[in-house]
Length: 298
Image (cartoon, rainbow, N blue to C red; front, side, top):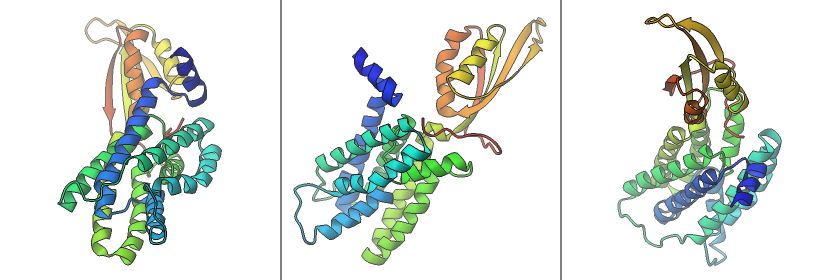
């Protein structure tokens, strides 16, 4: 087990918990698609949606023992792997390669239901959208990616603070669904858009790296240890100053930093070990403008 952990740390900057979280997110997404979305003749957005459209065309001439949309999805992702390698990071590239491969396996291995599990199509869309959004959010929060438009979304989000992965997915998906509406009818387009909207909404609430936060830490000792941890392990800068307590006029230190919710939770877990007397005030879901760097990929 130690050797596995060393391998994960060296090449993927993952620990076993993050790997398991990524795997669970992938399985959850595959279940949502193959049980609630595809049986209702609906389509995903992004690259997977394109793959499903190609699959539908191929099935008119060929018979396949399993849903080949996942295999087509992997093939289309190949050029996007190079984008991830060049514009994000080598670690993210490795993670994406593994995650897309696993996603291909589960999309192909989990059988698509011949008959919809739930008769009401709107209920299926709601459940499928929630499960897919949670699955994708878990994957992104663990530093992985399902490839496709996630790669494009991460690249744009890291360069423009006004964008998020969910919003970019929604923009791309709406374009694709308009094409679906022309080819397969307005009802298919409308239900698919509802699914995409729910999926994107849940992604943005689950993807912790995408949620901006700030922390204020009060401590009477070891302010420099806290500062060093934030700088070295979170790769964030920090502002700190000396103050005096209003009750006993003892010297204290106040440290302030803006970071993602994911980074804030890492700081929370370590704070009691770094400085046991410290306490932290935090706020999440805030708006930050200007030169604030989003770090959505390792």
